[in-house]
Length: 356
Image (cartoon, rainbow, N blue to C red; front, side, top):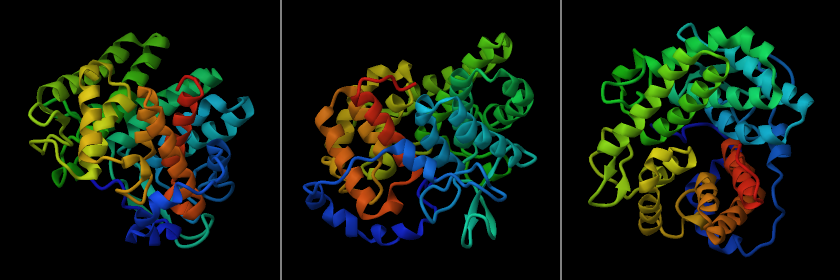
């Protein structure tokens, strides 16, 4: 699954290697730190059919999954009014845009986000649903808006069941797509399954908190099966690295998705896999050294810096933050909303603030 297939007009030139070739030199330049909360707020669509949604970057499109990764980390920084405006209205729109099978389609715009648009198939079903559930859990704990939960829990349960429970494969991994799209691609990706694990755990905890223990245990069990399967067959003991999908047989050497996937179990808190975290981190650094200066991809991959900060690798985290800031100043389109989200998570950890 190619997580980078989206349209951002301002980033086209970045993909030809212009940024890749200048990354080291640009790090020496002094640029302003980014305020991710303010920048994410600017990406919100204020009017029209998609009021409440977010562009992934200026002049970009709506990718619900990228949006989820972007707005989740800012919830702890929003007051009650902002929680309602920036999170609750987004969730309302998301649920309204669900297809009859509870999947969702992304949106391409011909021009302004209030004008003509085209529906585009999402590049996953499982991660979209799982990251939405994580937002729901975090929003409700911050807002205590249980009236919203009561009004929407049936739709959320249907979304969770169709995109996650029904998508679970016999090997314990989540399939990237619902049927019938899974006929063309039924792989279980490590990245997706880490996100699905987190969404399942968050959703299960929320259900238990609301007294729905049976349903909570039901979804929690799927999360446990994911980690069991990863332990069994998605860690390459010979190379000491995670395998990117259940369709691969070894840890690879490409930056995406082979080495970038190494941090996802730690980024999404798969504590059952903690014995592998150091080995996977070493594999990332050995196979793609210098990742923190952005040499391998025009897009920052700020999730790597977030995990560096979590691990106490302060120098690497700081170097990557400077790189993100330079990319933001030099080509705004490549620092998409999800990158802003992980940049914020890095800032939070570096400041000693919890990432909750």
